[in-house]
Image (cartoon, helix red, strand yellow):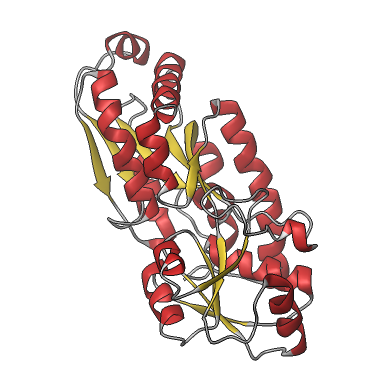
Length: 307
């Protein structure tokens, strides 16, 4: 076997695998596929997406953490694998802070506070007042315990001093289906219900992000209505096994950032309710560290465990 330094000079000499630790069709999968095609053209080798879902993303994460750090196995995941999972899965088989390294951020996916149309509120201020006046009456769906939309709901409860009942599902799609059917009252949607909002089947009250969404410029952020510091965005990005040669890491970061600057990829990610998020590896790692501290306290205070 060639030493890693020699591998870096010859890289890439064969197909590259991008493990996505979520099922096909979701945001992570769509982001991976949107970037893999132009990345294949830039590198001159096939880039193959391999979905390995399960255990809150830990199965795919472990596969990459234990792979050879030669640039031929990458991970496309949400920030939750690094910033949330270590707090909600106390017996993880790998350490995301040490066993994988950030390569390039890809997309910032915003979350949208949506309610069923029959709820007697017309804007987010009325919704907050209604939630506070009716403790325990409202229910909110999420893709599962410890998911970013779940933690967004817990942040909302903390900041508004209200109480709503969390209903976890196995994925965002079934949670959205029950919101549309009126079985739950609201949801912090990671972008999958935006067409339903446009069709008038859901009410969009606010964006749970630091800034407004260009898709809905008239919809306020929760920061604007008094929930200062509310940020439930999810950063999706590429990681590699620890020990990846610096030359390969730098090349991947450069090529991915070039791809994120193209209009085609910007439009594809905007369609998911997100925006491209080019960063250096250091900035990407710093963001994950910041989120770990922020979410870790919330998880500890609320005694949240993964499914």
